[in-house]
Image 1 (cartoon, rainbow, N blue to C red):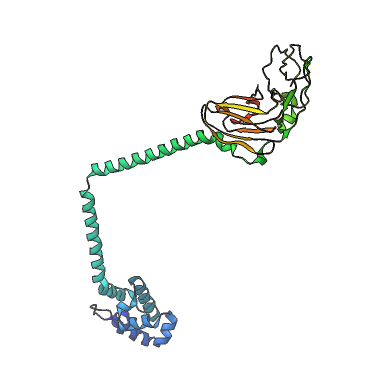
Image 2 (tube, rainbow, N blue to C red; image 1 turned 180 degrees about the vertical axis):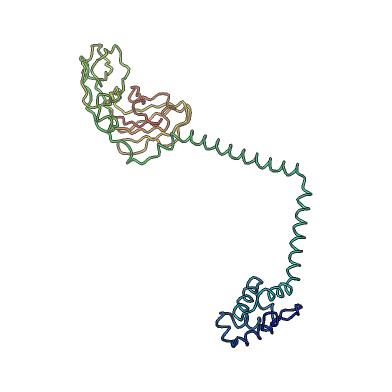
Length: 326
């Protein structure tokens, strides 16, 4: 019996009974063929009863039909064609719905004014550019304002070690005045090259220049004799004039706003906060005094016990750290 004889000439519907006839002619029982094709009972029964709606999605249904026909020796083409005719009405409706939706969308797009659409896009682009520029300006201003202040909020553990430097001997003819040694932070680079360490030179009357490195002259209130040159073995020593009252007076004037932290020998805060522009700090405490200035360039002047202190050698990245002792 040929495939054409099994299918016949009736193409009006899905000839499920011909699938059953072909299976029986091959000697298969329904359960045996179902197990061999690995189909569920629902799908296998739907194929042999012509219940096409129970086969599920068309892509799977066509696969079931091909597998069944291939196993019983039938050409799957006519059966798939019958299946397509049976479900073709639904497919046609779906295509028409999609086409209608596409046509409506196309009409809507055509109704839009190209000039209005272009103006909207241009406006959005400008807003994005302005937002980016404002963000960049704000970030730059914050970096400038807080670069010096932010670096000063470090822990005490990061403060360089302070080494006490012996005081300079008094000048000839001056039995009363004494020198005040100000310890200075000693870094690794200074220890390796003491000859290049910075020093603070105080203003002294009739002071004789000295060719020896790291020699600091001290004011004398009773004589103008030339001071002896002293070779200081430790770098960055600062000598200041002791006030006649014997106190440890610190005076700082500010030309701009700056953050300041000043502590005495007992680690008690004499001042901690922002110093306004034009402010004059007059403090007194037990030496040595630990001074940290967030903006060194904001300091107009600084004196300790009446002697001017140079912050230059003690300033790094515009942050000054110095310890003042009598």
